[in-house]
Length: 168
Ligand code: S3P
Image 1 (spheres, protein in one colour):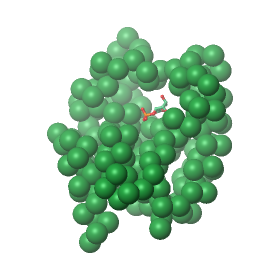
Image 2 (tube, rainbow, N blue to C red; image 1 turned 120 degrees about the vertical axis):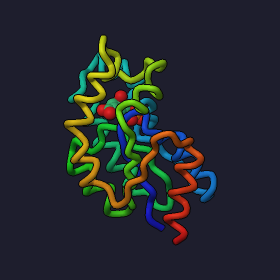
Image 3 (cartoon, rainbow, N blue to C red; image 1 turned 180 degrees about the vertical axis):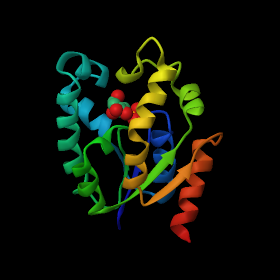
Image 4 (tube, rainbow, N blue to C red; image 1 turned 90 degrees about the horizontal axis):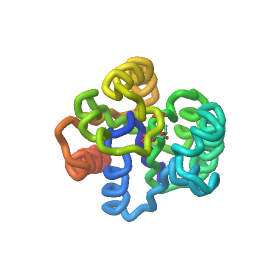
């Protein structure tokens, strides 16, 4: 069975939706961010701070290669996984990519009280969200086999939509 791979911007609900879907399908859930934390022995924010984004992206790429060797799992990818087209080629070999699309307003509401995302720990996170979304939107779209809009929905609702698509 092909992997179910969730992509989308920070705060699009990949982690909670992934957990919901994995539980319903009785599959393991794997997270690229969590694997990076385990490998590096420190939180993502510290990896960025100490070693920089380029280093983080290299580790992320290695982790993606490892994840793509699995089958029948749900994979929760970090929001920047689409920045390297090779990651998408690797993931597509054994998976269906689902893009959880979210508008900047909803993203901001979901991330504003969290501090663990280094790219959004800036004086004006709302502008940063818009800027990054503008750079990435077309990459998310071209990487996806399927897209689900998450605005105003709970992870359970998004998860149910996803499961319905799979059952149809
Ligand atoms: C990032 C998203 C984060 C994490 C890192 C960089 C990004 O993951 O990988 O902070 O570039 O969008 P989430 O999307 O799970 O927050």
